[in-house]
Length: 148
Image (cartoon, rainbow, N blue to C red; front, side):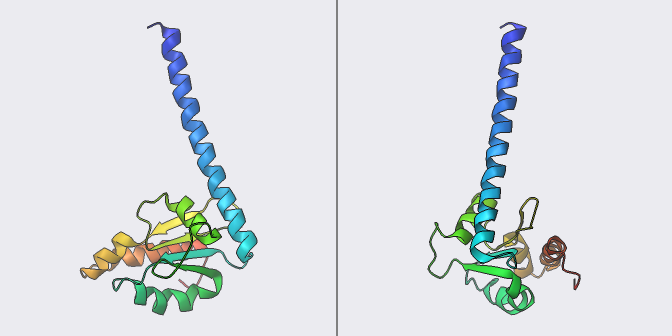
């Protein structure tokens, strides 16, 4: 192989990576725009969870009273459709990895902030609440919530 062929393939790989990155950013931006147009500017948080005994009641008793006015709730234990705006945003933002429970902050501008909670709740279940408190602190900071 000549140096030109090697450089061509390196350039091609770089272009493919950049195109994939740009496509993913565009998908997230479109999902955020659809979410905002459906739910309005006052809704800047998507909480996705299930009725699991490990986190369902905790989320309903702690998060919903605190952030419920700003949040759209997608409880996957109840009927939902993958074509609804909240579900589409959840699927785009998580990529199907570590996806429930998750809090997704939708800022008025900038990138989505997805904060997964599965591992944190798993640790809390085993008497180690530190990761849960840290993830909640990241969520509070991402939302600009001064109440801590």
